[in-house]
Image 1 (cartoon, rainbow, N blue to C red):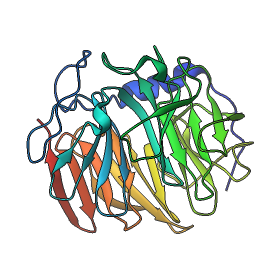
Image 2: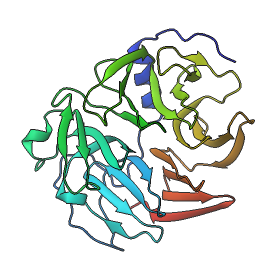
Image 3: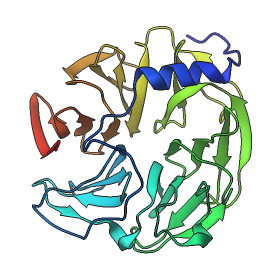
Image 4: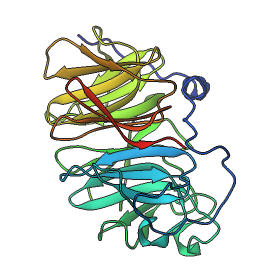
Length: 288
């Protein structure tokens, strides 16, 4: 099933990222202050970079203008805590939010500049503290495993960074030029790369090619379910070691992908934020 992965140049990731540039929900990406909290009102998110499903059919949305919570009816809360940072990476572990990105105009200076490094919230995004790489790194990729370990790839190296203490300290694993990472319930780490889908069964020490997988650029996992989207806009799902199954097609460029424990897949594409539940596709929040 696996063949050994060799480290590839950093520019390969840049090429892949360029091919899947994030969808603009509102045109422009200049610095701006965060909008006021609102519900059932159009919100100027700027770019959406990450969606993290919560247990109660709500999702956390990491955007250019802060962190928001969106429910199944499209009601929007945020920016949470009033923070106007540009969240590039976002995940949750042990009830804590782990994030990274860049400060906004009004972001407290102690969170880091020009990069946030790793920041953490223990109260659902109402307050944040700097915990690692402050001012140094920008993690576009962050994900958490079932054992509460956190994995990420920073801006200065393609090495997979691993934290077992909710982001406070990190050790480097193997280098893999990945566009995204996801971890299934059995602890296997999947990496979406320009050369195909790779997997590690030894905590990122080595990676090998998953020969039967489509070439994916965004991934997420919940339990033993793995979802991804390929460069043609086709969405795929795999349960355990079963065959890959197509589950729908995106419209335009997909900026973010999330899989809830319930099996609902959240996609941010040219339609806006869309929930896929079986054969049903519901636009929760239309693109502006």
